[in-house]
Amino acid sequence: NITTVHKWIDETGAVQFSDQYNPDGESEQIRINTNSNVVKSTPVIKAEDKEKENNKETAESSIPNIPLPTTIPLSEVPKLMDKTKDLKKTLEERYKEQETLLDNMTTK
Image (cartoon, rainbow, N blue to C red; front, top):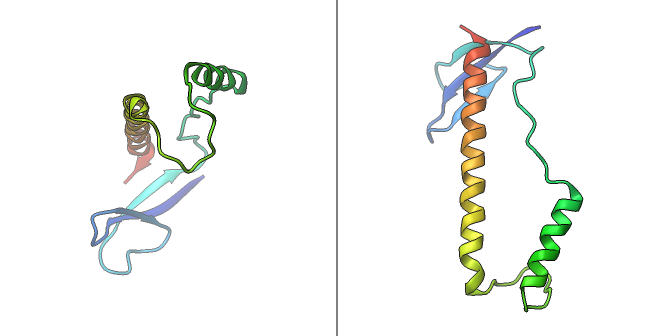
């Protein structure tokens, strides 16, 4: 099944996709095969693995389990930063994959 979408960059620089023409000007028409699965699934941590990780972190920490919102100890900031960088990298890789897949499956 082929569908047509309209793509344009709005006044803020964000890329917009719509089934309607750009109301403020020109848009690029892209034809997409909707019978394709374009996004690979994201691996999910199994519940038991997540529980093991949480138990390990709790065992390593002498701080009581305090519900959020709260501040974190300064000693935990490097770990938080590493996790944030890993997440950013994962999201950037996924974005690149999606862009590649979109480029490969569109016909102009």
